[in-house]
Structure formats: C-alpha cells, structure tokens
Length: 187
Image (cartoon, rainbow, N blue to C red):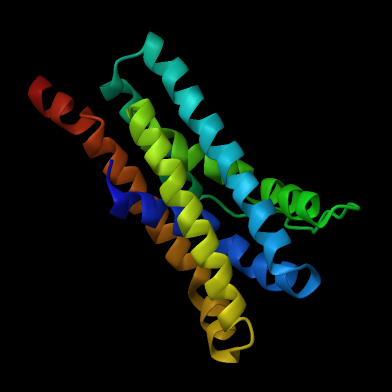
C-alpha cells in the first residue's frame, strides 16, 4: 500500500468535488457534510475493492494492470460531467447523493486499479486513511472557502492538475501491477 499514491488518487478523483464542498458547506452544517462525504467515499472504495477482488479470481494481476488505461482515458477524454446538486430532506443524504452523482464513475475507475491487488488488511487501512483525508479536506475547504485567490487558482488550473494526476495514477498502475515487467520479459 502506497500512501503517496492513495493521497494523489484521493485528491485527483475528488478535485472537482472540492468545488461542490464550497457550496455544500454554505448550505449544511460541517458535521452533515463530513458524514455524507465520508459515506460516499466508503461506498465507492468498497465497491472498487470488491470488484477488483472478483476480477482477480479470473485474471492474473499483471493483466489487471491494463486497468491503468482507465485513469489515463479519463484524463484525455472531454469532460461532460453533470454536477447538479441533488437535494433531499436529509442534509447527509443530499451530500451523499451529490457526491455519488459527481464522483462515482471517476472514483470507481481510478480506485479499482489502485486497490485491485491489496489485502483485506491493507484495504481496511486504506478506508481509515481515506476517511482521515476526507475529514481533513472538508475542514481545510471550510477554512479556505472565503479566500478568493484559492478559488481563482482552482478555476484556472484545477482541471489540468486533475488530468495530470490521473495520468500519473494510470502509469503507476501499469508499473505496480507488474504489467510493465511482464511485457519487458516477453521481449
């Protein structure tokens, strides 16, 4: 388990959601936003882990390294995400639904190849680590929500930075899965 890659993955997958957090934190209480966001991350990480485990039953890990193309594809494709705020009576449920609608596809595509070879213990540690990052991010976004310069930088460069991170993650998956060493051994 590589905490640097987990951190990079978490930040790059959630970068667009950080903007949504600005609005959600103005609309709901801090604890409601943290709980909804945390539940969303747990749901998507768990789905990624178990889908990856199912794939490992049928395919060797080095072949699953081809999943590294998913984050690279997401970096290179035109972005047509619909980030509408879906509301409900429960603030926690509103945050959860908003998060799932904005980030489900990217989260599953990016975290699946990163988590595919992890043990159950490492996955549990990953959940704790990402949970801590989730709480820290919400608190930091809450602190910087009113700084205009931060919003301007994210608006100007956020998408490019996110795409760069996706490519790095995809390349890491190629290397970490053994795909590259397997292909080199063939030649």
